[in-house]
Structure formats: structure tokens, C-alpha cells
Amino acid sequence: MAVSALLDFFYPRTCEVCGKACDRDSRHVCSDCLMRLPFLQMRGCCSVCSLPVRGYEKEFVCDECLAHPGYFDYAVQAIGFEGRARELILDYKFNDQIHLAADFADWMEGAARSRMSVADIDIVTEVPLTGRTMFRRGYNQSEYLARQLSRRMNRKHLRVLARTGKPQTQSSLNAAKRAANVAGTFKVTKPQYVRGRAVLLVDDIMTTGSTVSECAKILKEAGAKKVWVLTLARALRN
Image (tube, rainbow, N blue to C red; front, side, top):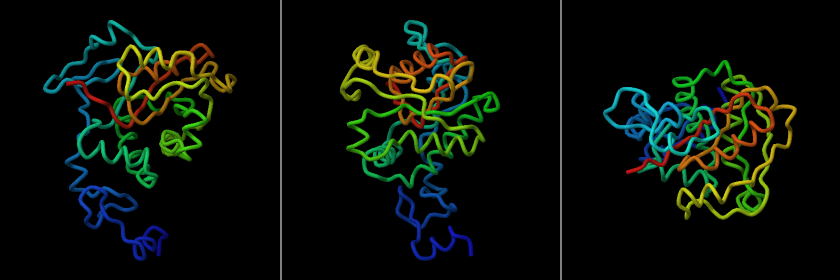
């Protein structure tokens, strides 16, 4: 008997959304609930940050990217940060529900393979946490996702970024303050692995994009030829 089947026998998995028995092997969201989650459309999106416009079919560059271009070359997200998806992601991020990483990596891998040239990626890395946050939480939720994705894409995972300073929590800040808050708070620790390479930068939630843009900036200053961003969720504007 396979290990996953044995674990399911003694510790039956239930869906994290509806609470019923999960019908997907080694996963924690059932097929029915999966169909109801707010996955983002693949068409009618900004060609830089992937902001979707419902009902729109063509590619465009959104007003925000035109007015305040980020340093990343392209960003893709899997799901809207809303409804039950939002609750799942917050549980994963703050409440030790790290078993959800495999489900989330499924969604992110699907988005990446639909919207990016995975074969062109050289290394996979993640947005780092501050030392204080890492000590308090005990894990970097984005690193779990990055490691899963690197294995699935057969690409090397490397920690090449570190956090410096003591920035405020981003969630309470507006776009301008978010950008100012993260400015100068990252450094590249292993420039030899970045120079001349295409980097896939992984994070959990993209709101204004200021954090991933700042990371992309210093990666490019260290010699990265491309920086693509892949996040689990996107906070959608009304």
C-alpha cells in the first residue's frame, strides 16, 4: 500500500472548504470546492502584472503599470484573494496550515505553465521574511511554495535574497507607503547565482506589487537578466 493511501486510511483527509471527505489524492480541497474557487482568467489581462478585466479578451497594459512601471518583467497569479480562497491562504500563512502548500503549488504551477515559458527559468527563489517574522512564525510560507515549484519545474531552488531593516507590516499601508516602506530593505546574498540568469520570484499574495518590484530591482542590480514573478493570489481592485 502506498504511503499516501496508508496515511489516508489512518488519518482520513477532509476538504478544508466543505469538511467532507477529500476525493483528490494527497490534496486538501475536494473537486467540487475546487471548481468554485476564484481562479483568475488567462485572457484579458495586463501584459505586465496580469491584472484581469472581467469580460475582456485582449491583452493590454494597465494604467498602474503605465504610470508606475515595476522592475519585474512579468507577473502571474493563480487565484483571487477573496472569499474562501482568502481564508485558506490566511490559514496557511498565519495558522501553520502548511499542508495546503501542495494544493497551492498545483494552482501556481498551472498558472505558470499557461502564462510563462517555464523552460527559460534558471532558478527559483522567494521573497524573504524579516528575522523577527521568521522567528515568530517559524516558517516562510513563500519558501514552501518555491521549493514545491522548483521540484515540479525541475529548476534549482536557491535562497538568494535576505531582508534588512525593520519595515512595517504592509497590509495597513496604501500603495505609495508600501513602496516607500520596502525601499532598500532587501539584499542579494548570492550574486554569483543570479548574474546572467532568469529568476522566478515566488510570493504568496500580490497587492500593489511593491514588494516583488523592490526584490526584482535588486536582483537586476545584481545582474539577473530577467525576473518573473509568480504569486499564489492577487488582491483585486474594485
